[in-house]
Image 1 (cartoon, one colour):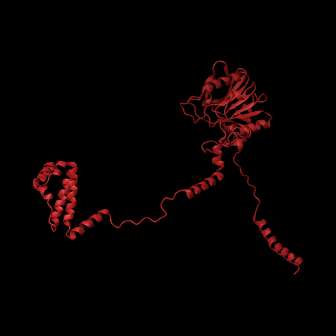
Image 2 (cartoon, helix red, strand yellow):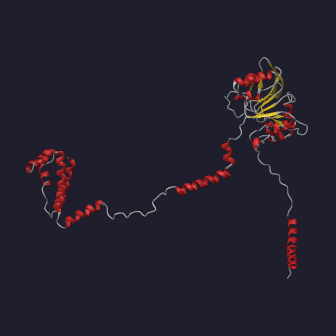
Length: 391
């Protein structure tokens, strides 16, 4: 078979198998488009005002974002706008006074009241106190916000209502609320304005956490909702085309260690396992690899007992008595040398006086028992041990 004929045969087999398979695949499968929403990356993962800043930049505005308010670095100018998402209660008194002095020159400050999760006894901060804003004894309640394409819309569902009683030099320009309290108030101070809101959730670009107790419209994704865009544009109106927008989002970017822990685990987990395996390999084993030495078949007490029984069996009982008597006399020489130096009845009398024992009992203990009398041997050894322990 020639090479040309062989390749034609292979091509024919492939067409014979491939064409039916392709027809079956196209008839049994449909093309489906699925959109996967990835989590925010970079600045969008920690800056809730990132979408607002991007929208303002797209509209030709100058925008700067900051995790905390820093007046020396910001160098605020008349006509600038500061959106303070950071809790105003954390601001010290000098910073609050500097912000109010900047508002007098023509600035626009937007801030919110203390969030509802704060302690009831916690102070609301010097900035709100200077404006005459009081959120104590008020609760969170939704406020209807009717727009043309969404007549059942509501806002400010997660912020505390408040009341405003401004001091001299500050007047209320606009306010929005009902008998439950205000949700928005615009104050006029000097040449500038201050907008106080009960809630700024609608300005955020991150989705809200689902809560079945909240109305459906309050679960919208911040500025992704058209009504929220209209409301944000209205709130930013006073200095919209004048100066710079400063967005103080009140959070910090993730630290290096948190990034390593949560995002770098594909690297550090295998390295940690390799380190643990190396330590296990290099560590000293718990236990010897050599067999344990053979233990003695008998204890020392068993040896002593067996030795004594052997002496008794072969008539060597006086040796056992003599050993016990020598042990008693050795302690007697250490404790009572005078009595040990005596002999005979004088020694027996001295030992009886020392131990306060009867004379006959001591005399019996010091007499050598007959070699065949085991009971007498045990009695004398018992008496000698008692006398030795009493010295």
